[in-house]
Image (cartoon, rainbow, N blue to C red):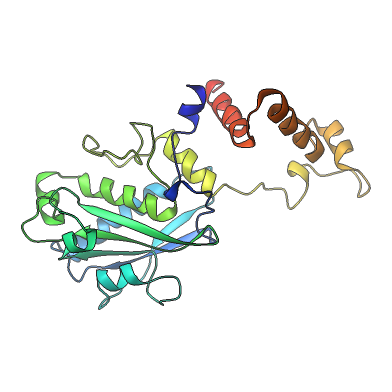
Amino acid sequence: MLFSEALGFTLIYNSAIFGWSTDHVVLHLNTDECTIPASQVEAIVDDAVKIWSSVSTSRLTLSRGESFSGTGASAIQAGGDTSGYPSPAILCASDFSHQLGDDGNYIPAFSDARLVHNQIAYSYVIINAEAGKKANIANVQVKLPGKMPVVLAHEIGHALGLGHSADTGALMYYDLTDRKKITLTEDDADGITYLYPRQEPSGGKSFGCTPASANVTSAEISAKSGHPSPADIQGWQRFFEVFFGLPTLLIGAYFLTRSRLVK
């Protein structure tokens, strides 16, 4: 139970991905086929951008860049990292069911990402703008005020590398039926931090500690500062793996959960 709570988040394709190679992801919007004014779509995207950029433990920041036009959902879906298309792209599709490959009556948006050597190289979010569908963005805006920012933030989470979470309160939980506000839980923050952790502000020195002289070893630094040396860390990892049969990932989960309990 302890570990399941700590590891509620998953990654897309359940793989050991590394997210985007950049610390700043710029989203590109195409409103050609949207059934609400472009300014409303921009506001929805901006709300989603703001929430994912607000995680203090993550180095990731997002922004909405220049809009694009003339490239539809079919081309974006068929594209890739060498296609030259804007990415991550967000656009509406008047033939949403065709793009989804299923009935779009209850799906307001979907997303996908392409990996190159386990790194995200291309991703997109496609919004339902199909006439006559209940989940058409215009219909959702009228009948479910505040829902589209939640939907877009969830799909952008996928475009950044996150899968669905087992935490029922998380933005990345698969069922957004009862979600009315665009907020992140600790599990969402843990997930995006796992993919895009903040860098240790050490200038390359061991755990941010400055040795008294250039000849001081890592072990001496550890003894002077109370921080573990790299050898200490490897020893503890080996201890957990051999005596408890726990992989390194669960060790991290233990300390993550412990930090929650002592707050």
